[in-house]
Image (cartoon, rainbow, N blue to C red; front, side, top):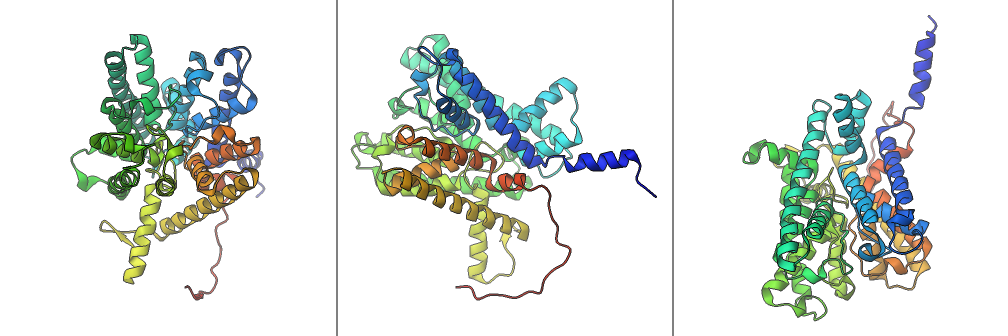
Length: 455
């Protein structure tokens, strides 16, 4: 029986339907383009004329990808209008373009199409479609509450402790709260936050916002629902929380110990202030991007240790970057199981799916390949040392935003490369790769099994 015209049209249209990952890539690219146009307007820049295409594009990419690398001084180059554009790009990019669009659609239409639910679920890390609407609303509510609370604390400190006018204090508080929770690292001071290195009323609220944002929205939503019932936490929540605590302790101890006597960094502070600054740097290395000391003066050993922290990043489906702590933890448990000679990988009383193990290995290999290739390219384009260039590349790929101060000095080709790394790093290597595939090709048969010699 021949197909009906309606069936044929449906089959033709299905060929042009974008994969959810493709929709996410296109949405991020479109948002960056809109931000670039707005930042090129003369009203967005201090002084006559508008910003150049490269300045606007780099800033928009960094904001949407919640990275924080800059080629111009955010405090002096951009007008209040330009700064508002930047913070809006940070907020939309941190929440996720499809999450933001879906919530707007829910507010206006009171419903979501199946395709919108699939796309939003892919972006927000949902494991099913049963309660995508509730998850999205929970994400927005959690984000707004945390940002308002941190913003209020910072505003009060800027007003009372530093004599800022009320309007200016509120703007500083809200901007840095949004930037911190979204792990963006943009600051409205030319030295970032170096003037507040010893002020716990500035450092700790920002660090707390960065940590909460780096946990990932699925973890935050579950903690909000079951704050005192750890037995109801899923494996993802347990891994993220455990890994976050371990990495914060290890990072703080390592950076504080290495930089303790460095007169250009922690050596200038008293003992308690050294610990505070060391802790703050450890938090920011996990994707926050703020700094209270000059990373250009850090010891090479500190840069290498920070490279590792930046690459690991934060929790999945959140505002942090990197390969994600879950990927790192999966590889750790795979290694542990292999050393013990166990047939299965067990985590917190549950067996780890083999597909997850393959995904973790794939993500790490893609990340290492991109970082290595990009570092080589920058070495050919510039005269900077390997440790500095590697730091910059990982910072861009992991959407961290920390810099030794060379971003603006890179040639145009190097800055374009950093933009591509930020874009790929924000969307994730797997998402970016799947967005380029037209369709999945499931295997229809299996080949015979054979084992090569390993090691």
